[in-house]
Image 1 (cartoon, rainbow, N blue to C red):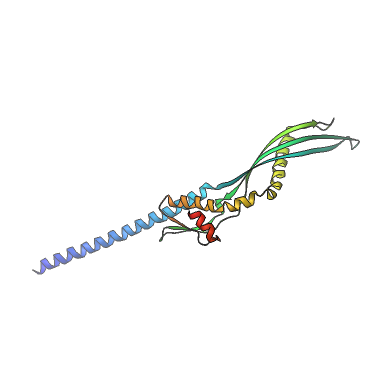
Image 2 (cartoon, helix red, strand yellow):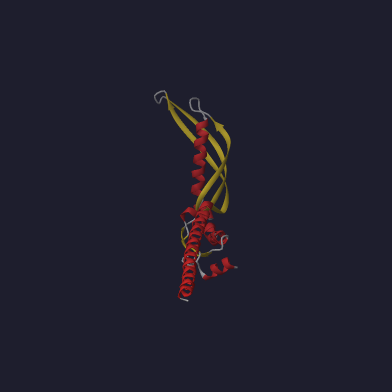
Length: 207
């Protein structure tokens, strides 16, 4: 009789031990899966990298003039051109600058800082008119490359007064919504309560 009791107790203790080991293994596996999910989602958000929210078209007339001294400053040679700059500027957000962390226990991503909008790219298209080369000073392929850079800087200086930055700031909520949709792809939630968003704007993003 005693042997039977010992066998039964042994089976019970064995079953408890096996269940404990199984529960420990399952808990560890679930933790690894959750941590893997958080790493994947954070990397996925950052892989989007730059998010364009506003696009602006510019048309500017640019007068270019360059004077070059030759033969020990005895001669001055001038080249000039009238350049029409048609450019497309993209304003948006660099998602690498997001301040966010994952709460693995609650399966949510906490977004505590959203970056300011910035100029992501400027694509200029130059059209040359009234080109005049000097005798010892003419346009070269290098000049065209430099003029493209000057055109970008010329447009960049026009952007602050264009209102594009303010428009992009108003589109920040839509950018947050894009991040939220990415987070939801793996069944997590986005907590952006730390961001300074008015109640009316919160209602507009939730609508």
